[in-house]
Image 1 (spheres, rainbow, N blue to C red):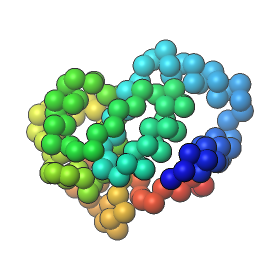
Image 2 (image 1 turned 90 degrees about the horizontal axis):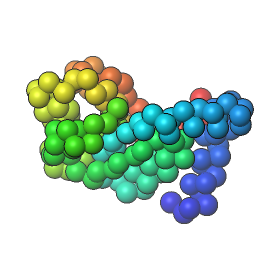
Image 3 (image 1 turned 30 degrees about the vertical axis):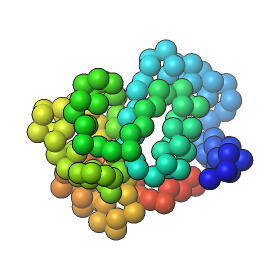
Length: 141
């Protein structure tokens, strides 16, 4: 995706948020002081880039990974406040990665899964994810 499209998309998300500029800047400042870490697992470079770009501009510290087999060590090292996980990611897949995380009693980290899978809501419940986002993403309500 060209950088101009990303800027345009960021503007749409900002405009749709219905937050005035002063509130947005105040919120961004507070988030920066909290050092919130978001860990994103997606092998699609464009989606990872777009998510990182939008969330970084909102003041979050974002780390992306294109593989998820080291999820437990990643969580221990980075101490994220939330994980965004694609279901169809090499090598073990998002479902298995979340199962590994839960088996290691790392249940305090919320996990949001995202996928184009039509069964995403059922999968989210089955693997005890904290929520889900359907792909393709839509910036409009």
